[in-house]
Amino acid sequence: MVIDFSLDVSIALILIICTLSQCIFGVGLLLWGTPTLLLLGFSYSEALLLLLPISMLISIIQFAPHLNVLEHRAVSHFMVFALPFMILSFFIILEFVIDATLFVGCALIMAGFLRTKFLQTFNSIIYSSKNFLLPIIGIVHGVSNLGGSILVVWASYTSTTKLAQRTIVAVAYTALTIFQMVVLALNNNTIQIPVVYIAVCLITYALGSRYLFSKINEPMFYNMLTALIFAMALMLIFKTAQ
Image (cartoon, rainbow, N blue to C red; front, side, top):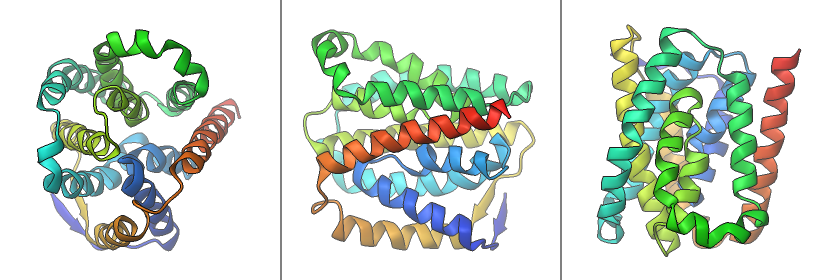
């Protein structure tokens, strides 16, 4: 493990935007940061080595004050049915050095469709079988780092309030990032602590939580987020086609 004091202004701006998204929805740093860094030419491992420590710290800060609203049974289901699939798929993609860009694009398209109104037709079916999403979350997150896109859907059927949903997403993200960093270390990657970027994200999170979380127009932002997911997916797929 090494301490990294480097700073790139463009990357810092990307992390600020991603952190603002995470303030509101519980997802952002990995969901947006991963495809954006891939578009900038980062490898999958390089993107994760930068994003995972920041995401883990923000997630812990998100859930720690709100453990009283946490659905403990849902957390247990997540640990049993999602984590093993994430670890296995993550080992595979690192071992065979697979280019995850196309898979990331496809995963984002699937996540976009899961967020559309079309999904509401199947609400009762999805609710009754919501835990079947957990292995899918694990696999998608292992190979693309975008399991949060489906994790949000699962959380919406697990918890009833916005705060409870964001809390369970943060707990799940913490578990995912911890095990991802363990797998990266076992795969001979040096875990880096990006001190400057962590400071930037913590300041952004503090300001965003205070001024955005309770005031933003959530329906409008939800629709914008869905549109951006599709746009990012198309850009990634176009990149792999070049």
